[in-house]
Image (cartoon, rainbow, N blue to C red; front, side, top):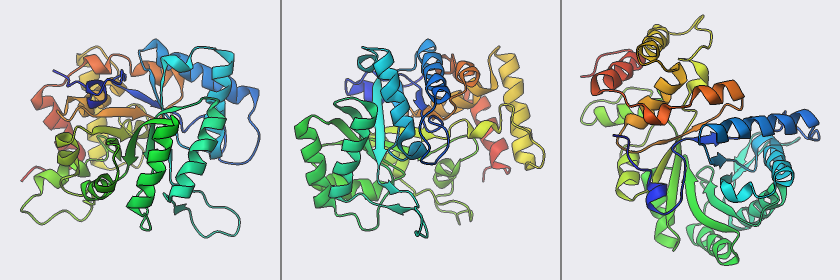
Length: 325
């Protein structure tokens, strides 16, 4: 049986699947929003709501703030809709600008406060349900972060906090100084990104060279009732219709297996791929990244579908491309 989300246990009525909004707003440039951008947003939101999704994931950097602006216009067009949604956004990445050599990370207290004000302005709302710190910043000062989060909580601008792309050790460090619990950790997890599993089965063995997922992160989040969210859970369509030309044998074989299971269970490949994640007892919440209404609709029913242990392992081993030890 699919596990209850830790978010729901905390009294946050989150849908089993979330919609990631990175694809809204057009290009990652400074061009103004267009009528087509707004239309696309309405269609994506309507498709999500129609299959029971009420959780929407943003970040201040998505299309350089334009994704949040799209939602701001949607809220203007549909009064009362904001209260029906759980809105999560992220801060902590500074995008490359002319003269820069790279993106950088910044979760200084000053940047957090400024980013939240910008997000609220673009969304046209008074509060965020959840704010995530987007990336671990090597220069992060946990005491400074704690003060910024305290200010956001006291002002009512943010109701809950979490992190993204962080290890158990990094969360523990921040939590030691922060009074507010971190209730989410969003990580890259999918049938194509399985290092979170390989890290588990490689204990007491020489790790494979591509394992970079910090051992113990999933276990820590489960013990601390931290919601695990998976970004990129559809693996950019690798197993659900994307061209397989030039793909590794493991991807081709796994795509065929997904298609066969979908046919057997009278569902879609997207539902099989998502169900594979949600079958795991950690109650992972997939954050689907597509804003295509047809692909969103194809995810319907994934939260009602559960794979057998045999089916789950067959998909894992196929994607892994080699037998378990």
